[in-house]
Amino acid sequence: MANPFQFLQQTRSEIAKVVWPSRREVLVTTAMVFLMAVVFAIFFFFVDFLIRQGLELILTVFG
Image (spheres, one colour):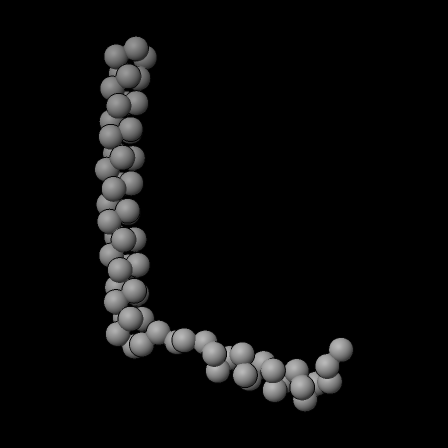
């Protein structure tokens, strides 16, 4: 088992190997996540609307 100083040294060397994304990559990825969230929200809104209308139609015809 390594002592705490060695552990911190190894941790620091491992963090130095990480390739961090650029600011532009982070902004583009964030924008894409928000865009996809909006697209899926709209999609599920219409799916829910169609299912609701279908069920109301079935219940009025057979109810």
